[in-house]
Image 1 (cartoon, rainbow, N blue to C red):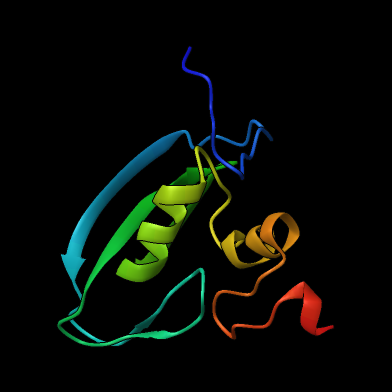
Image 2 (image 1 turned 180 degrees about the vertical axis):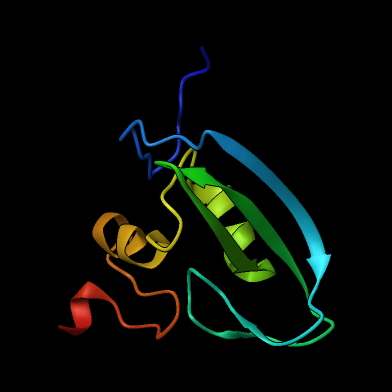
Length: 102
């Protein structure tokens, strides 16, 4: 097993039963599961589909959030990146607000 040296690690054990991840071009507008910003038609993004706890789900992640997640996470829960980075780094990478601003 490789040791994780990242800042964020989800060790909840909630692994998908089925999983497929690929980079795609948007055929219509979507929302990024991490930052909530629009993924515009034609924009390259990650599309992950799978079965978690018996339920099918699809998660679309903009390229910026995908890179941030790749730099800071060994594992994660889709949709929790923004909160996790706030908890670990004290920064909201979407708005630019820092814990020092509070």
